[in-house]
Length: 375
Length: 203
Image (cartoon, rainbow over all chains, first blue to last red; front, side, top):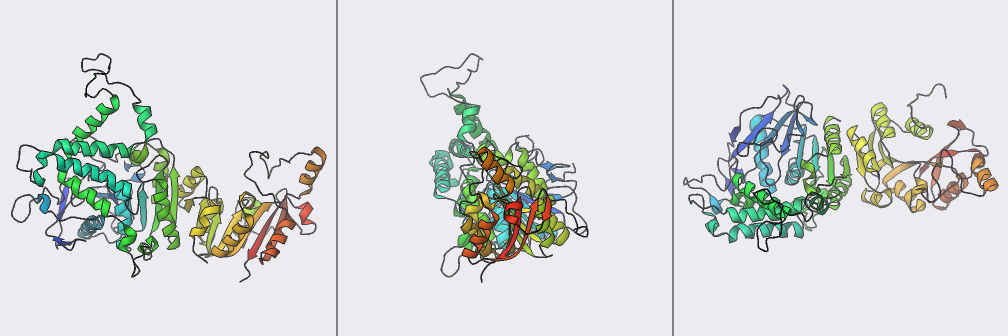
């Protein structure tokens, strides 16, 4: 695969934000795969999820693991880099090269909590700025799962001429009270960590890793299904470090395998993610309400109004075990697209892995992605 | 029918594919694997959309580039705006609807006209099977036993015509088939194995 070197584009004009502020000289870090056609008609923008990044199909520089959608993106794969020029950028607010709370502000010190609160639409504005910089007027498709799906929908609604196809997987047009509640648990865990220090921890030797790990553990449960967790761990006990069989410690060590797994997920996450970025990005997701953005004078918030100007074809995919963004959320979007007269496909796929199914081995998803992009 | 183009479809779908004008908007309710939609799109430039309840069928439709929504026609038709389509197609599905009368009204709300095809329960082989054996017939067109069939509202040609009249629906055209061959309308209620109707609303 022809993988370009990690690239960063600095936006030539200040990036306007929904909060009314603007971000000067915002940087967008991205990776691209495949070759852009001479007429620039074969570009696919893939939007990453909350804790994702631009390392879509290339080795992650921190973890050394394959890209987060390596199974989906590559030559001959459903998002075929032999046919398409595939772009994936780190969203603003994040921490792998795009401007975020850890980036230096005008005074040379990290923004920390001085970073403006951003929205999904602000992230999309940054991505469109990148497309402008690459000279790509109209995408073949925008694709995303979870928060990436929110960006795909937001791009279709706010920049209706910029894409021919929209593929939104395991996502929603607005965060529910339950979604917001889980995020709040994570944010409070971070802010309760003494090392968070009001967000000014960048120069310190201590980072709010304990809080961030708890945030990740709580969120990770929402990404799985009860069925999947039971199948994977049940109530099995964790083997001891010396290899002997696990038993109850009558203490608070990770006796159960599921505890050990969550601790592993949490600690791995703190090595690759910034706690303040987690605060800002979860906030952006909680604020997301596409209908509200297009509310008329009555303030009714008809989601169909968001898609009224769109000429794109849409495809929505949900998973039957996803309780974070359940099928009803996708149906809600489909009904709005029907009302707007947009060409839309929708399928609920059966998979045991819960919300995370979009990242895992679900062959029907491959067929849907390949068919929708090629059709 | 030697002069007619063959689309290699089931005979009722063949009629619909032949009669739908080029370039119109069609909603295929219960579109299965999208065979009719693909023909309409590829040979007539039709803007075809579908609803199908079976997930794997929807997946096949999407994989062939069709716009198909997984859903239950009994519930989801209400989410389509009035007059969104020129034609609504309901092939071999009327007898599975919770309320066929309401389904017809919905089809003629979202579409200007509608094509309806269904197996005729008054077909003479059905009558004979019921008469001689005294059991619910299982045939090529109604192949599933009574307790597991999705066909919960068996209908005859005459029933359909009376329902249409009662609902103020105009029957524009009709086609009848037995053993994959088109037959004349004479005695269709006992001679036809299945039927296709083109209907329009009173408005």
